[in-house]
Amino acid sequence: MADIEKEPVQASEPAVELGTTTATSKTQRLLAFLSEEKNDPNILGKELLQKALEFDTEQLERDSIKVRRKLDFIVIPMMMTTYMLSFLDKQTLNYSNAYGLQADTHMTGDDYSWVASALYFGWLFGAYPWNIILQRYPIGKLIGGMLFVWGSVCMLQAAVFNFGSFFTVRFFLGWLEGVISPAFVLLTSMLWTREEQSFRTSLWLSTNGVSSILGALLAYGAGHAENLAVSNWKLIYLIVGAMTFIWGFVIILYLPDGPHNAKMLTEYERMVAVWRVSKNQMGIKEHKFNRAQMKEAFLDGRTYLLLAMGACTGILNGGVANFISSLIKGFGFNPLRTSLLQTPGGAFEVIGCVAFGWLSTKKNMLGISIIVSSLPGIAGLIGLLTISIDHRYALVACCWLQNVLGSPLVLGWTLPGVNTAGHTKRATVIGLFFIVYAGGNIAGPHLFLPREAPRYFSAIWGLLGTYCALIALQVVYSAWVFSDNKKRDRKGLHVERAEEELLEGFEDLTDLQNIHFRYKV
Image (tube, rainbow, N blue to C red; front, side, top):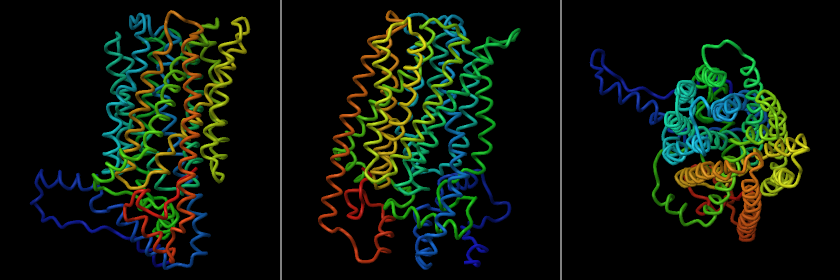
């Protein structure tokens, strides 16, 4: 074991004669570095697993706890901070709206709704291409580079002067940030077991709540700034964009692309990390595109249930994320008070994501967790429909309950990752999932009709119906995969040697092809 730690595996570099390096060869070497052709993750993963199987299983079990803790305490905070900044970038529109944004940019009618949707038009445009790129290129380096770019674009929003320019900048911001969610779903599936993934995903998405608190406090502080060279709402974009840009240096240096090259792990610990996730029956990552797997994704009925649920959560998120500020302000609060009153909603989201994320790790509780975590949002919507505007703080509390949406949203995101095997099939399903999710986010803000301000009753009814549809779809999906698991169990579909079963997960088989695969219910 000591020898392994001292002699990490190094990929060989092709020799290049001095003075013969041309621009073309430099470009080829750069592309090879980015695409990891020299260090194919699935090949390296299988090699590391074969080495790990030479060790005693009890020793691997003991060491796997240490490896999991390392990943939890080093990688998860990096993912949480990145996702917090990503959500903060999106939410800047909501916070800046309280400080004269629409008047300064000459927006009228439903212009603001279209600007809110612009980010998700960009996301829609990039959703599938990003998933193909993520299958081909290393995740850590890609995310680090994108942080520099979208931080700059976020700051560029302070330079807009009308609806057209604002819509354009928000479109490109959405296109760039469309990489983060599928990237983190994929990275989570590569570093943690299927039983652990929903809770870890809930942890990094719970930072939406943290960003809601920080964003509201930032907007509150910006609202107190006086005698500025720029408007208060522009200051919000400049601060958040700069924070994102600076954080990019940390991610590009330290965020791993998978268990095979995690810098915080020794060579032996990387072997243990691969051994841990080999039980997922999904391998690590495969560069090659498989047309047969793509076809299977379109023919699998479960795909369309996932897409319908993605559309539901998108509609809910698009409405809630962009109009909470407008709702609270419409209850008779000034801009500063409106910003401050949004902070408790962030706490609701953090608590909801962590609590229901933990519940989802229990056996056969993922689907139930999605259903139960939808109930607070439904209760809040009913309150917004029935409580008199005279009780405005009760209405604000109903708005806070909408933040619990983060829990069913992120638990729904984990379903394509944990229940789809085969790298091309999974990339296809996740790509399609985020396309319809983005489409839902585009549609969500348009439920809020300007003539119905400040109560927006049609929008509230629409969101309530969407929640009910989400619950019904989840019931059908959970029953389907539970039934499939039971059929495989009854047939006794297992091999005699556990090692063969683990190694089979690196053969890039789909969930339908791999007889040892079991769906997470």
